[in-house]
Image 1 (cartoon, rainbow, N blue to C red):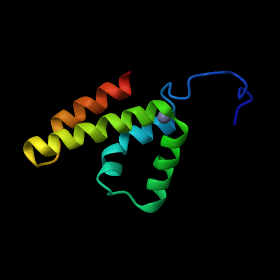
Image 2: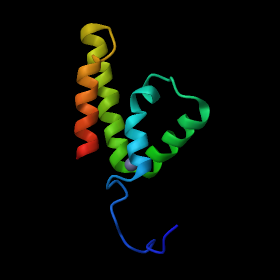
Image 3: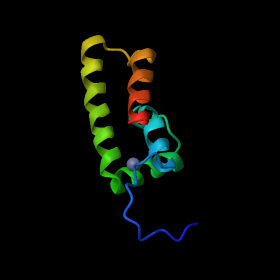
Image 4: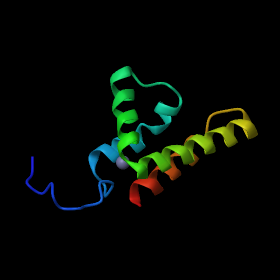
Length: 88
Ligand SMILES: [Zn+2]
């Protein structure tokens, strides 16, 4: 609880909801989340254009990778992409 609600800060500046959304993104894309977590991420994507862009990027990336190797994204590549996004 803060009293800084009127301050126009970037909602994606490393805040917890964004970190969670990015961290769960692949599980979300793979449909591996329970309903409650899925709802949280889905709602966040509605509210947060930055994370929505990230989601759409990964959605396309996933489709491309699936086409090319018909397997899931290698863990190493996945980790590198997620690390880059979190550090942004
Ligand atoms: Zn976000």
